Amino acid sequence: MKKPLTLGIMGGTFNPIHYGHLVTAEEAFYQFNLDKVIFMPAGQPPHKKDKEIISAENRYLMTVIATASNPHFTVSRLEIERKGPSYAIDTVRELRRIYKEDVTLYFITGADAILEILTWKDSEKLYELCHFIAATRPGYSLERFRKLHLLPENDSRKKKPSVFFMEVPALAISSTDIRKRIREGRPIKYLLPDGVASYIFKYGLYKKASL
Ligand code: ATP
Ligand code: MG
Image 1 (cartoon, rainbow, N blue to C red):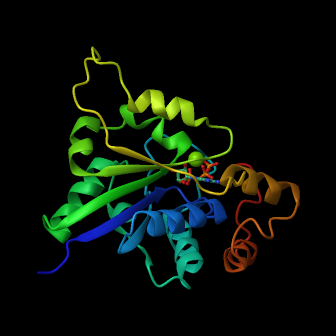
Image 2 (image 1 turned 120 degrees about the vertical axis):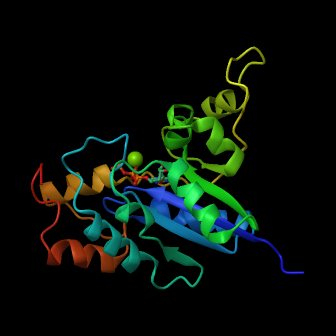
């Protein structure tokens, strides 16, 4: 009998993608014995009203460049091609339709994102359709996730997310910091793959505060 597929979904704005995202996805692949990790650049991130978000096509292409050398990483266009805000529930449902029932889905997030999942659209339905992997991220304490995971018994939300915690080597890298460095002419080398940095410089991305 064929073994059911186990997929990781690495969602993000990837504005731009950096080593924090890549290390987290690789560690989840290893620790959770995943068959592959699908990077899912958001078309329109629902929680970010940021003027600094560059086009979905550029974010997608940088994600392809960053993941090209890894045979078990792929990049999906699902969210960038869907109209309207990119909700995780729609993506997970679509992946379930594509892969049928024979798939276990792990949604990979950093500590900051996992703290917000209760506020995500249709969160209780989402909990039935996928597990979550919460990766440590500098500045966000594990204690806070554990509290979220262990919602009090009398909490009106009946369903709890299935969250697995994962330690990744602490990387204080963020896209916000990378964008700021570019604006200020400071180095970004070693924070993200060289190919992504070359793409950014080639097209003059992130030079102005609002694009
Ligand atoms: P921004 O600063 O613009 O918010 P970001 O660096 O947080 O960008 P996102 O695209 O928002 O990147 O993040 C996508 C996912 O990757 C989120 O779940 C986030 O928590 C996680 N992530 C981002 N950076 C790291 C990191 N350094 N270590 C672990 N997880 C990370
Ligand atoms: Mg972020």
